[in-house]
Length: 310
Image 1 (cartoon, rainbow, N blue to C red):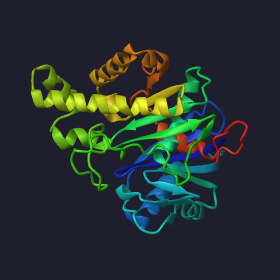
Image 2: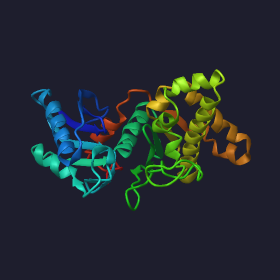
Image 3: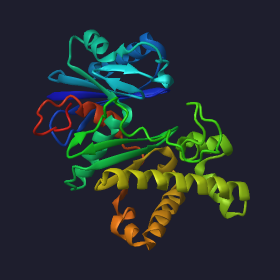
Image 4: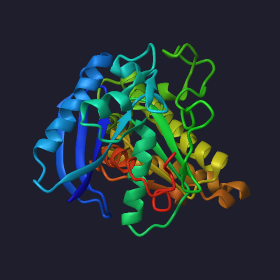
């Protein structure tokens, strides 16, 4: 049995899976461990997960590769600016460190949202889609996108393709931790909701529907911000599909309906009708392990089958 391991390393937990190397990439083993911060902590957390996954595999299992998705800027297997992991100094050669600690198994590292884009693409293909242009919009603590264009992940000249959370949404808005004012992330994300509202997004919508004016304002900012992000991706790179994921939208059907309504309202113009953005939107099912699955798929070596390999 030939397998690939995929690790989605978040600021709180590491989610790891082992899947079969060939499609449909059946799940063989899965585990979740706490994340330790700092360079030694992140490497140790990853190696602990690799060991846990390997220890429960069948005797005939052969691990072909390990893939890691991390919330930071990734270049040639090294990670920088992963603040949630306590990595904001010199680049960490995470791929080299994990491979060395895992018996030399080939290891690849990718930004977590970009890795999740591969997992999202696999889900779409499992549904019968044959698209090769995709934007995955992740609405979590922040908001960011992964881009797969003409079958290849787009990294950009500095590895920052899809980092739309710090585009300015309102130049008169509050100060963002990045140093700018009114960034999109301050409105269209989980942290944006928590900044202004004590409850969940679902409770926010309920309060707004009950006449709470503050809740209505925050709801409208959240809805318009996510709709703007979707429109930005559709207009800028004209992808066939914008696949939206993240706890904020997955747990709130009212939010998904409001986003689609706003996008459809934009179709009142001739350009809006031509763009047809609402019909491009898909919602990744809650609980789908796109991050870990996409990380596992990083190890695929056949470029004809996996043209996204960089």
